[in-house]
Amino acid sequence: MANLKAGTRPPWVGLGAAVWVQIASGNAYNFPLYSHSLKSVLGFNQHQLTMLGVANDFGENVGLIPGIACNKFPPWVILLIGALSCFFGYGVLWLALSSKVQSLPYWLLCVALCVATNSSAWLSTAVLVTNMRNFPLSRGTVAGVLKGYGGISAAVFTEIYSTLLRNSSSKLLVFLALGIPVLCFIVMYFVRACTPASGEDSSEHAHFLFTQGALIVLGLYVLTTTILNHIFHFSAPVSNTFLVIMVVLLMAPFAIPIKMTFQRMRVSKPEMHHQLVETPDSVIQEDNAEKTEPLLKSSSSTTILGSFRENVEASEVAMLLAEGEGAVKKKRRPKRGEDFRFTEALIKADFWLLFFVYFVGVGSGVTVLNNLAQIGISQGVHDTTILLSLFSFCNFVGRLGGGIVSEHFVRLLHSFLLG
Image 1 (cartoon, rainbow, N blue to C red):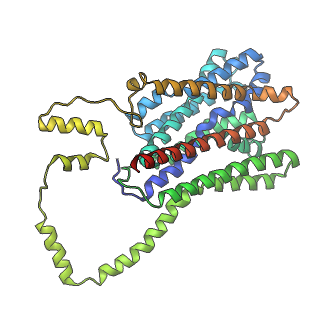
Image 2 (cartoon, helix red, strand yellow):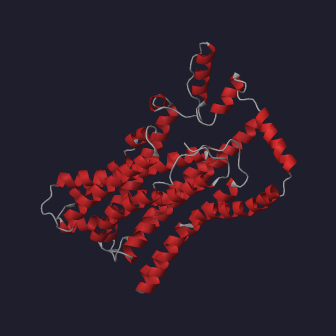
Image 3 (tube, rainbow, N blue to C red):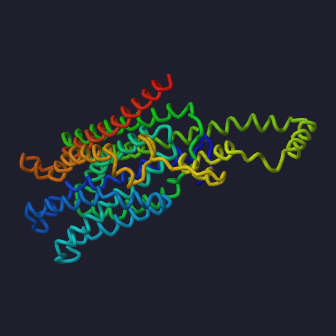
């Protein structure tokens, strides 16, 4: 794990890269864009299409294995597994839809779709866990921002589908099978764990406000351009211009590490000048100070605890100190707000309450999403891009708002308890 101080660039570079991965993790939302083609080309009935939707949802939401793997392997391994899942899963679907391979069995398509959409769990888990560990004092904000980008991803894919791919379901599957793995390989180096800052960074709040503002602008922009293109049917150059602007807005989070780079360059120049005009006496004094510094420092329990606090959980530190001092301590169970192991969470009422809320809330949403194309066609709307963009925008607002509101109440409660 890289040892980084507060305000350093790599955590923010990783957050900017995580934005793109989070957009890619929304690939499961594209099912309404090609489901009608599967139904017409492969001759599926509505029941068979519904079962494919179940496979789509099952693959997207099975995140237990990615969660366990994320605690044992570095982020690039998790991203690699997600990229391979996309390649093989969507690759098989493309072979079936484009008739490159004739008469693929129905069960194989269900498995392929499940594997393809399971990439969402791998990609999202990798970037969420890594960035929440990199910004431990703003975990709610980080989760809200990244989940917000995941929510708006359907609108981004819709823009690509209608502008770049010309409403071709076959081209969309090729794009998902090849484009997402390439993206993962590009950003793999930047999504990495960093030692979190020991104190609160004064500029962190402003940086997150900028990221949230960029996300809101992106959501409004994508929704507006999709609606206008649906009404006025813009020419190819105009549509391509809209697409380029969307890519620029997706690059907005990288403005933070770029700004920090230029600030560091401006600060380093006066420091270098100050070092050049230092007197020889000051240099000698510094050398003497270095020489008189003891090689071994005190090894009290407080010193050990301070050195390990950034990398090890408090409960594990307590056990290490107990073993080192010959004491016997009983390891306590984590309290609310601390990190839980999976077996510890299973016996908590909070876990099952969250599970029930997620099951009811998300379950109803994905049911509508899977049948969005059929709902639109039944109402005479054959172009489902506008419906998917509206769904994506509302999804994004809920995700971003949930992160901001939860973080606000956590900070409010923290201030109340301290005050």
